[in-house]
Amino acid sequence: MGILSSEIATKSLVPLCRQLATSYDAGIPIVRSLALAGENAPDRKVRDVLRAIADDATAGATLGEAAFNQRKYLPMFFVTLLKAGEHSGRLDVMLRDLADYYEDKQKMTREVVGALVYPGIQLCFAWFLGTFALGLIGKLSLDARNPFNISDYFQQYLAMQSVALVIFAAVIAAIILFGRFGVIGRAWGFLTTHIWPASVVTRKFALARFFRSMSLLVGSGMNIKLCIQHSAAMTGNAYMERDLLRAIPPIAEGATLVQAFSGSRSLTSVAREMLAVGEHSGALEVSLLKVAHYHQEEAKAAIRMVARVLQAAITLAIGGLVGYIVISFYSKYFSLYDQLL
Image (cartoon, rainbow, N blue to C red):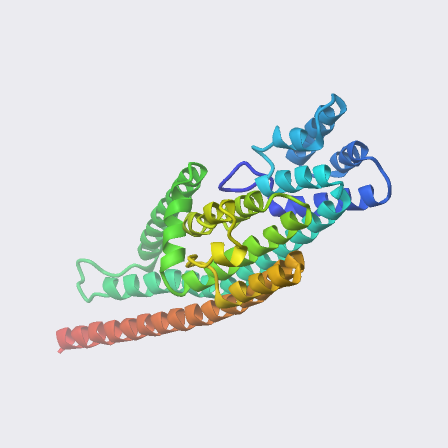
């Protein structure tokens, strides 16, 4: 399950989509494929959701309707593509594309987390060792009435860290709580959209998701306005979503994609060029997929750049902290020396 939502986590969707695609390609009916995937799923929530979809489909509901009934636990992108594949007769293609999509998404998530692990470890060491050293320097004294006791200091230090951990846990719990109501998403979206260098990464990843979704939905035969609407929601950024949705009214009036997105501030020059190529060549699905891969690689490069910037900033901060500790130590040392004299 997702931490900030009740949706099934990506790591559970990856094997689910791949198993559904493989079973359906083998000629197994989709209802039976759902039942088989549910029986083999290690996550209880996944088993319950698949069982509910299979039951609704057996009772006469379409696959799209059955999946929509589980929208609390399934991403809308998953539901939309299942429905589109069923209506277009390309369910096998949609299932394979869903499997590829969630595998790519999981891979990107791992790369992002991997790039930020080392800076996170540095910050943790800086916090624990820095607070210990600064507290130790402050406790040094020659006053016989208040002698320094290392055991007492360790107890005070552990008590301070316990309070800090409780505060940290409370902050994380508040973030999760507000995240369930969408408050954190809006605030985080504003910060990551407008503040460098997070804005670079956010924009690249959002565009990669947008064009990948557009490619899949266009290939399913869905109406272009609905393609834009569903794909804009896949950006995961309310500000970019609003900007991309502005292209729908011009398209309703007969404008081309290039004309409709001409006023968009989110699209890059490469994206505009590939849209034009796709429209003129008639291979819009292929062009959208290529521009999605381009922005995905750009996003990975941006992540590596941000990780380097973050590592450099943390290294400088740690160097400043070490310098401050050294200066504080020698200031205290000479102060004690003067007291001895």
